[in-house]
Image (cartoon, rainbow, N blue to C red; front, side, top):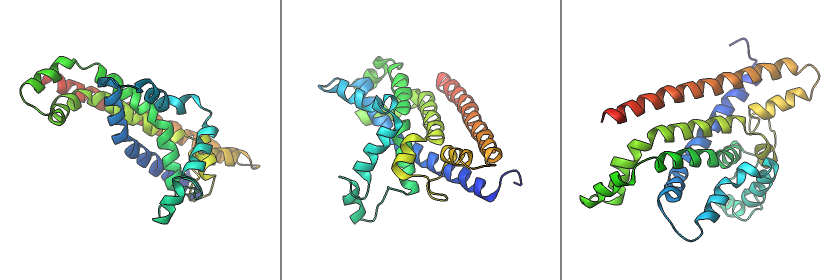
Length: 230
């Protein structure tokens, strides 16, 4: 506990909070979009695919600016949300939103690949036996895609932990409110004598990211083994 100071602990806890809610917020839309891209054919499918992956190739600052003009208090959506008491700009919720947007392509891609690896004949067989599409998804598709879903969630969490450009553009770098690990490292490097604190937070970032990846691998193997035995 003594290795990190109170300010640094606050940064770590806020980062974990932001990454967790970014992962949770992206999960359901990610599953839906991945399923649509993997299993359905429709006009505009490639447009949807491009939009999903756009945050991967856009400069993060550009993504943050688009979030600001859309979800800021004067933005197209943000102004309406403000009327009901939901504000994203310069709040930790905005940091979670920015992280979720940046992590979304990685989540969708992992889940989509997992769904595409499932033999469609298994789903078709269940459907011919009278199972509804929702039941087929819950009993066939979802269990078989669990390793990919888990991998996608971990990737989303790790990406959210390391998100910087979009976050600092959208919600700034406010101590105790939006200062996550990357922005705190950046801030410490801007002040004399801050290198030691920055290095401590870099070590924490590495430990959290590595731990998440190891846990993901272990759980994915266990789930895959159970699915294979079923």
